[in-house]
Length: 233
Ligand SMILES: [Zn+2]
Image (cartoon, rainbow, N blue to C red; front, side, top):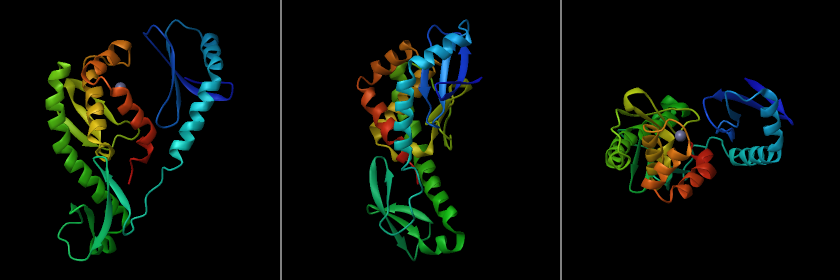
């Protein structure tokens, strides 16, 4: 349900839970979660009480996302892979559209000329997906036993504003953009999702589980919050 308090438009989601919370989603939407029994007036009051925090958080979100634009595909442009930035180099004779070689992205000039820029960006996406299908299953296999869960199939795809998601039977999906983040952050994303196989929410029990496996997860979570919007091509 859409509601508004103190100039803050938010979506209210009621569910079986003990406490209320307010979060700014990666899309910039304000989501308020509240226990089923709480009436609208109490929710509006709770949001009003935290209006200053919400406005400040939204301003910060704007700032972090203002840099969210496509990087031009020009010689020397940096694109990240596993936390390191590599420069783009156009090559004339290439048998693949894009590859990472000798510390440079080699993008086929002929391919871009023939197929256009959207296809070149898709070549990057395909690269990350292909690498992700090697990186994620391996990390899921090593970290799964630490969480004590048996994960299902691993997929790497476009997930919009989610870094990862889990489905029935323990299936785990990861966003291809996460391959731009450092390995330590990727591990945090994996552990976060594995812990969701035990706890579907973000309760204290859930975070305790994450903390057990990655005691310094907060730094990695913060890295993702600050740098997440820049993980794009
Ligand atoms: Zn989560």
